[in-house]
Image (cartoon, rainbow, N blue to C red; front, side):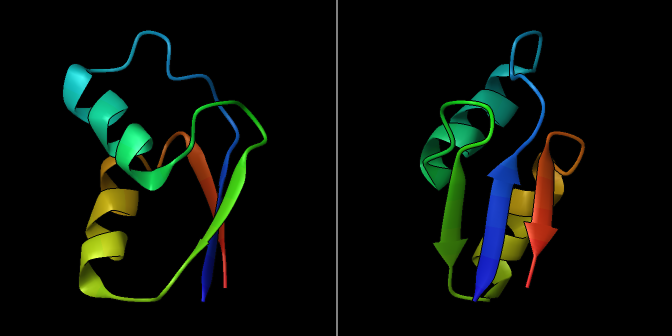
Length: 56
């Protein structure tokens, strides 16, 4: 399981990055979600790595 936490605001992000955050369910700062560890989730995290904090 991977825990992803939004630590920076999405204001000023590119639209694609905003869609990724919505798909991950991260809508507010300090919002945290858990996901299965797979390539799709890793790719989404890579798109917004400057906005999130990842723990395993």
